[in-house]
Image (cartoon, rainbow, N blue to C red):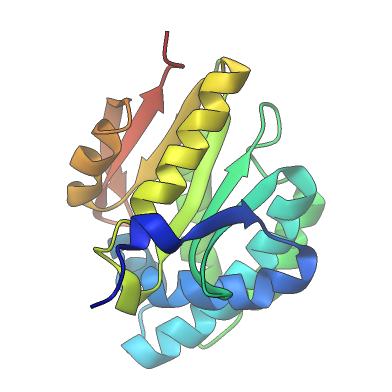
Length: 206
């Protein structure tokens, strides 16, 4: 019988050479998220391929601005968690330009929809200094094994050590209850590309 994931998974920061592998995990784990389905209006296989290209560019930029945690089981990357520090949670103009080519797959409307989505999230961004959580995903065949919990526990431990506030967005209703377990409180909600989204904040533990 397989040992519990909580006991065997190693969490460490990813290196630049690992972004392609990490993008693959994100593209599989988040392929059917409502925002991604609404933005990439194509079949699941094509959407997963397009997301891998997109997340590869996103992670390249995030590694410059912040860090990306990886969950490993026997040297296999099974989960990814991005985190950006205060003042660095939104990509700059140059970084956005490097991401745009990865969106030009199929219809040019994909880029327009994603930019609209990014603008909506930027408007909702927490005003006070905070660490921005995301993207976060566990590979499809490893979900429900406690790997996401390990990543969130590591993020929260770092926030408590820094006495820092955490902030996130999610487009999955079931994630709201999951994040609440780690001290996140619901700040607001609204629609992005027609899909409900939730915005949550976590204060450091006393």
